[in-house]
Structure formats: structure tokens, C-alpha cells
View (cartoon, rainbow, N blue to C red):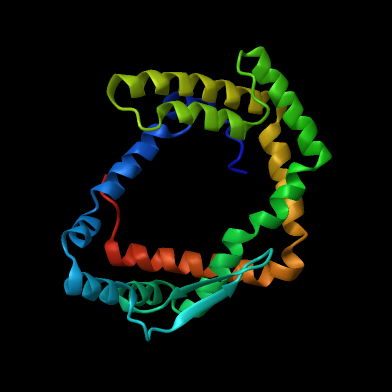
Length: 226
């Protein structure tokens, strides 16, 4: 139930996570692999892409996703080799990963229309209005706060982040006082549970492969410093 954040201590320090997002954006922008790819072109650039993802004859993985539609991707090159090392059966992993990551399109609308959840949401909104932040739901509060920090730097970012933190703290306090997160978790579990007949086996496989991959990754790279 990541839609609702009720950890006041975390909100007071991190707001809605704009500083964390900024660090992640910096890391992506300064990624040495991306920088190297941007530095080459022509035949050398095409050779890099083929080494990374495989050439035109590389097998293509296909997965049908909940709610309709199909996702495809190449399963070759160094990226494919690394994923096979982690997940073993890459065809199965690709299929269950896409199922697990796209189930939200089915159960989230049902949960958001649930009367118990909507009643808790109305209580949350009334609490936020009393705190001086007139938002209808946590998603709108988060978006309004983070909009102020986007593409800002230096003192402008810090001022916007302070305002973000104030909204995030009020959000978390209201979520606690109205039990919005616990209600949301219970209703999320209920609606997700109604899909286990069709997707339960795939979700079990997804969890098993994911944990196995994590253990393999930890064995390869060792413990994180600090």
C-alpha cells in the first residue's frame, strides 16, 4: 500500500522523497555506461548495442499482461546473459515479472472504488483540510508537493523541499489518525486475493525467482559497505 505513507518520522526527514529522487537522477545522468555509449557512434555504437542486447536474430521474449496487451523484449547479449545468471529460466521470469508488475491495473480501480476505503479517504481529506492542506487524496498531495521541487536547485530546491516536508508530515499524521493505511492494506489484500485463482501460481513463482536472484546477486557482489 505504497499509495499511503504514515511514517511521520520518515516524512519529517525525507518529505516525499524528492532528495532521494534527485540523487537517483544524478546517478543515472552520470552513469559511466551511459556516458560511454553517448561518446561513441556509427558502427562502434551499433556494436555496443548488439553486445548489450543482442542482434536482430536474438530470440524475443513475449508476455501477455493482465488487462490485455503483450510486452516483448530481446533476450540476448550481455544483459540477457546477466539475467539468466540471476533468474535461471529467463522466459519464465519475464512472463511472471510482467504479470506481477501489471496486476495493479485490475485490482487498484476496484480498491479505489471500495466503500470502506473511500470512507477512510474522506476522513483523511477532512484531516488534511483542517491542517491547511486541501487535498482529496494522498496522490494529489504528493504530486502537488513534488511539483514544486522538480528542476529546482540550490536554495530554491531547499525552500520547496521544506514545503514538501510540511505537507508530507501532515499527510502521514492524517493517515495515522484515520487508519487510512491499515484500511487500504486490508482492502488491497482482499482485492488482490480475488485474483489468486487466476494468477496465484504465477505470483508464487515470481516471489521465488525474485528471492533466488537476490541471494545470487548478494553472493556475486558481496555485502554492501557501511
